[in-house]
Amino acid sequence: MVALDARLQSLKTGQPQQDALVELFTALAAKAHDVSRIISAGGELGNTIGDQNADGDAQKALDVMADDEFLEAAKVSGVVAAYCSEEQDSAVIIDESAPLIVAIDPLDGSSNIDVNVSIGTIISVLPNPGGDLQQSAMQTGDQQLAAAFFVYGPQTTLYLTTGNGTDLYRMDPVSGVFLLIEEGIEIPEDTSEYAINASNARQWFTPVQRYISDLLLGDEGPRERNFNMRWIGSLVADAGRIFNRGGVFLYPGDRRPKYENGRLRLIYEANPVAFLVEQAGGAATDGTTRILEKSPTEIHERTALVFGSKTEVRWVGSYEAETRQGLDQSPLFSHRNLFRS
Ligand code: AFP
Image (cartoon, rainbow, N blue to C red):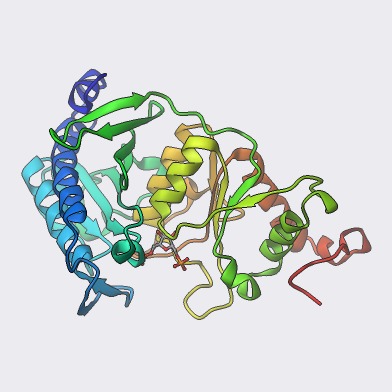
């Protein structure tokens, strides 16, 4: 099997920013090995440390530890100009002349740290645009040079794209070497499996309520087949399942304060996942707009996120369109809705 380093070397094009990916992901993979060993050893990793991140989320010991580790990796790589992290209020400037910008969720799935459920690290890599580096991550997702996420689970895996398809690597637990196990993943276009936090059903806006209600009606409803549901609470774990067997993931906006644009962050969660998913033949939107075309206005900006099997992402878009056009009020659409009297 091909090791990550050899694969990255084979992807070199002579273009400086593209070639810098080799140094970057070599450093990131080495740190992921360290983080996976810290997680496997257990300990007080899920304890809150009394601080909050920029969005007011309580920080846990592992959130901060992972952020320290991956910031160090960015510095050691020698190719990162600015490091934009969920755990940092603003961009950490490293070397203004370096070719790359890193945007990262160092530890995704913090609520699962103490219960031995898969968690991960999500990474977006952008070109250094020059100018004010505090604004350097404010680029559309289409500008990404690479995207990746590590999953720290029964296996430690890496999903990585540099724009030539999405590949899956598995880490050898002893050597820490990431070995290529699937080249050019293809997400099935159709699925009967969806992922959403159903406890928020009363908070969803009409289109998502109608879409999920019709899935729940199964073969007695307009979709004329039954569906299954999974929700792990770690984006990387739900995404890994979707890469493996298809599915559709939804974290929509809802009526809760601060959740009108959902929970997930555009720059270091939705954009990298969307790049990986599209490179695997899937789709990623905010329900209506393609994620990779959205223009960020601040580092920790949230976005609704719907991604996975292309057909189901399109179905969600059709429910959004019906509501925008007022069509969901017409008798044609007056079928039973489980969430409305
Ligand atoms: P945490 O890192 O704060 O646990 O958030 C994880 C996450 O951003 C994403 O990984 C999950 O899909 C989503 O939140 C789970 O959100 P809910 O806890 O609201 O279901």
